Length: 159
Image 1 (cartoon, rainbow, N blue to C red):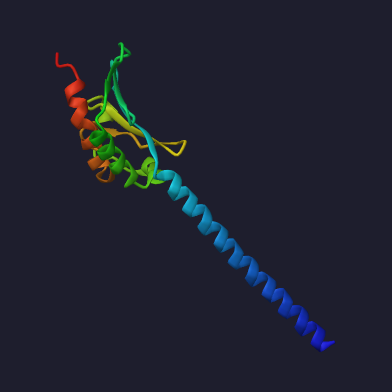
Image 2: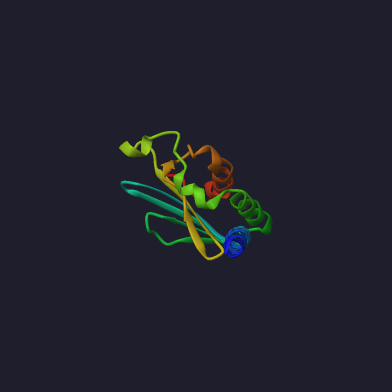
């Protein structure tokens, strides 16, 4: 009887260890899939808004579309090097964490700054950043924000 008890315990413990190892392997496979999906940036959008102002610029691999206050959009082509630079900066981010980034300033609360959001579409999933003041992105988004602003400055019409 004692031998049977020991044998049953041994089989039970061995089964538990096997299941735990199998779960770890499945989780590693899921993480690999998520990182692979995140690598393909499809679209990057910058939205700036406050009372009376609503600007949006959307970058894809072939075009950039700028819209101001719901007017007719300005559509233009984008060079492969521009898109490569923007998508490279977006790929470097932990996209699942951008919604939790804190803004260094709070001017948007009193309309003294445009409330800005960056939206990145990667692998069919849309990631939206936390809102921040225009010109003052969170440290983690600063390089991408500056890269997006380079061609956008040219498109914006000066009054």
